[in-house]
Amino acid sequence: MSITVVLFSGCISDNGGADTPEIINNSIGMELVLIPAGEFYMGTDSTPVVAFDDPVHKVTIDEQFYMAESEVTQKQWTAIMGDNPSYFKSDDLPVEQVSWYDAQEFIARLNEMENTDKYRLPTEAEWEYACRAGTSTDFSFSDKATDLDTYGWSDSYGWCAINSNSTTNPVNQKEPNSWGLYDMHGNVWEWVQDNWHDNYEGAPADGTAWEEGKLNSRVGRGGSWMDGPNICKSHFRGSLDANSTSNVLGFRIVKDI
Image 1 (tube, helix red, strand yellow):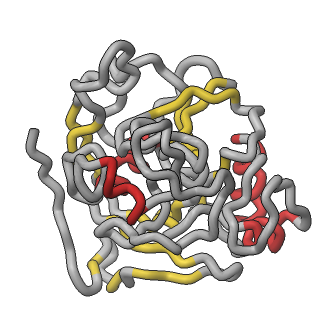
Image 2 (cartoon, rainbow, N blue to C red):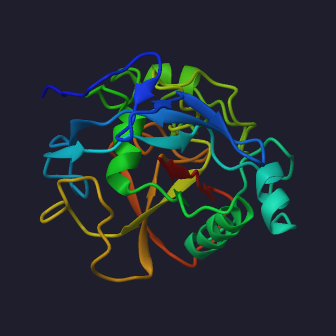
């Protein structure tokens, strides 16, 4: 199945006509990259046995947005929240053991600090769109699980070389996808805004969050350091209790323009 996306280079003109930089930095040292508007096919028709990521459906992202190049680090978390809940501790490791509600509190405080309301979690569609970065393969780089070592931190599950050493690893150490996003495959699961649904029947086609249903069942994306390549694919999705905290669970943020 083909994918159509609108790619840009240089500065991008927003609806107001002003040049929109491709990369911005915020007050706590986050670097965010510009994700272009476009369209893509979300999900897969090839998942065996149980398919939570079908049917494939076309999604249109009408507005460009910024996405953090990495998962929120412990240094960034501590700058906002004043503590560090992580099991594996180091400034450059992704923060983990944070619930969906903890992520929302971080975002609220960051918005307050910067006097804005533009930071938020990505929607599930935005996350997959940004992860794929114009590809239609299982991963943002190819269909080959053996290539995952170059792009992410994962476990082997017995058939592909392990590289995580059973721990989280510093962000931005592997190769980014073609849109400049690091660790979209593995390291820690990433919360998104959406409620969990068992499949995409009735999912929004405009990239907005799907928030009908059980409020405490939310979606995680990307897999983690303890998951095999089959879990770290661009389309794979997990159901998580919004109150869950685990050393495999973190998040990254986006910012509206």
